[in-house]
Length: 425
Ligand SMILES: Nc1ncnc2c1ncn2[C@@H]1O[C@H](COP(=O)(O)OP(=O)(O)O)[C@@H](O)[C@H]1O
Ligand SMILES: O=C(O)[C@@H](O)C(=O)COP(=O)(O)O
Image (cartoon, rainbow, N blue to C red; front, top):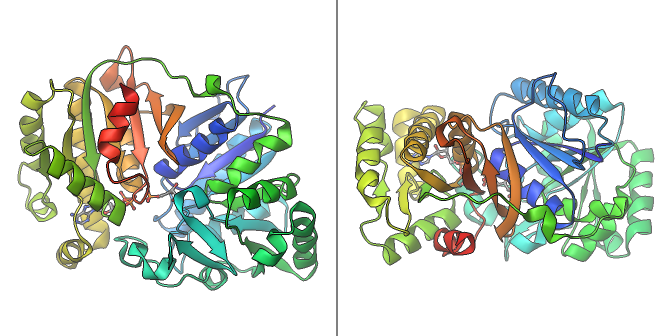
């Protein structure tokens, strides 16, 4: 019986969530997109994470895709539903967190769900409803200038309220710090007062464990990946290294980055400094002119692939540079052009023998794994919190498949691109 059915609004977010469940001993299957109706779940899976690419699409499309995912998960008997959103609450006043949460609640026949993006191991904490990234409020960090979902307000009650028809409330830290019973009591009280969605504060893993127990019987949880660490305990599960073992693959190494987040900018700069001559920048404006950017990148990479040091192909650039491109091309067109180019490059690199591929950026990862025809991921050990190595089958990488690591924009230490391959050695 499937204990947990998860719907993630982007691909890196899905591996992040799956990784936290696997770390606590759950056997997890991650699918990319909703499986076809006839596909059943592995008999021994405890959780399925369905990765959608719904974070920044039109709200009605995000709702439709999420409901299709829910229908499939319920068909598999999922006991509880987890809607995975970004730990930086990436959304716009239109959605898609509120509209998708509303629709899932209607379909599940529930009038209440907790909402908590906290992931303290990655320095995402929520206090009095305000989301912090590291030492600063969300709105004062780099998410202020995200290319697709600029986050200019850190107050999550205020951010979520315009996205939903339900009342948004708060379970503050003074309640959370008292533990599971206090949280449970406050959830009931809020619900009785007509609150439909409640932001829950959390500063540490201890808070997540306490809330995990309080959420045990709720039909729906809306959260970043952090809350997931507290759920396997509700099923008596323990961490197990066996859950993280992946098939071996041998081949070339590459990194593709379409993330313009500050961590990715620092990681690209670090790689460029350490490995001169092994990076190829993609010019978004050149792509728009129809120049042969993809072919040029692949032709550059091919002769370098035999080295154990990876090649790096990146569109990663500063917020100012992104803004200049967006002013000329529009936000959606710029994003699409870059994603499609990087996806085409990913396919050609794998066809050329790359078998260990790191992709940085949620939207970028979605585009790359879709182009590679990957429909399922097996989750391995984390390289850094929230970023595991995964094994996948792709028509471009048969018979043995390919290892991929899908890195959320702001995750990972500065030397992540080197560290990933050290941990793979
Ligand atoms: N140089 C660039 N100019 C304009 N847009 C870009 C550039 N580089 C990347 N992008 C776009 O920015 C978006 C970054 O989003 P994503 O891949 O989700 O990264 P993150 O995980 O950091 O949010 C993608 O749509 C990508 O195509
Ligand atoms: O929760 C998180 O922060 C990540 O899992 C995630 O979803 C990040 O998204 P991207 O930064 O777009 O990769």
